[in-house]
Image (cartoon, rainbow, N blue to C red; front, side):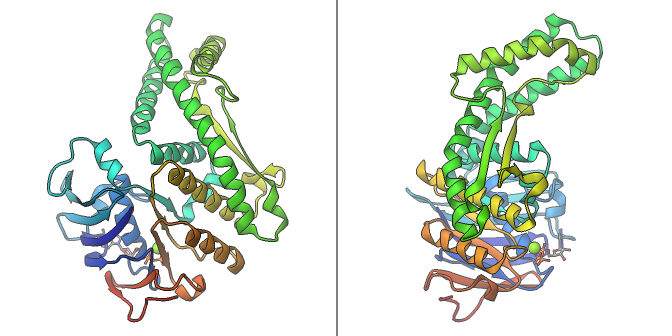
Length: 374
Ligand SMILES: Nc1ncnc2c1ncn2[C@@H]1O[C@H](COP(=O)(O)OP(=O)(O)OP(=O)(O)O)[C@@H](O)[C@H]1O
Ligand SMILES: [Mg+2]
């Protein structure tokens, strides 16, 4: 899928912006604090219905305005749709070709995106939650229905946790929530396990490609640490979770916390045999995150989904070689790529005729003349 037209009104510092493009590479460049990330955030908002850096929707609306609007023409494999999102005081309004979508699921089917922003370094460095979120997002990219499963599971864990915190939860009260955790948890554990197995060869390949001649290339590893590991079927995983709940039930009651279930999974990442969170250099960590994102993209494409790739602030911390090899990998696949950067020269040559350079300054966006080629 591609966005061929984007129109924005009163989003952050962008009063009015319009881009029309059929390019595969959309480069947004300009100095600091001009609105590049804001623009990318607007695109992400359409795909994810939430921001990657703001939980308060009203802060997404331009100061002094009452509502914001983001509209995109999306060319998909079968048809072209116009997606529109408005943020109004206290609510959000969605339209597909001027009609309210029947469900969120139907909306998410229309535009999918994979995001890389500098904060995503946390996937390598941060707490297990960051890595679970990455995995869940990768599953969601290929099957949007997963969102519902994950939300149902989260609710079950929250309900059980609330009961445990009272300090007087009776086994009979906990039983229905334990059942939910076993049933939904087993499906989540299996989906994550399958996703890790599917991602692995792509992560290894992308990381080796990007690292080039560097020694760390061959030795990236990823492994899901989960009760549901290995090649188990659904009922076997469910049994494992059930048994663990029985074993830790007493401790859960004592500590007032839900200790068993896939909300405790971790995706272990290793570089050169060592835990990447502690040992990877900044460049290695960033390379690994990009490799994970490229793998997510490759898996999506192998399932017939072609998400956009949104890359914020590519130029920090990657050496020139790695960055150019990353761009070469992007060139080799067909997805539309949006990149923000302060200095497009740093990107090096992009495929002729496939890149457009848009200048962003003080919330205004315009196409650079003669920006056809790199
Ligand atoms: N709701 C809002 N209304 C008006 N301006 C806003 C709003 N939210 C953020 N801004 C402003 O938008 C400006 C541009 O932010 P943005 O993050 O897009 O910059 P950028 O071009 O990506 O810069 P950098 O290169 O530093 O990452 C900031 O100065 C910020 O104060
Ligand atoms: Mg920025």
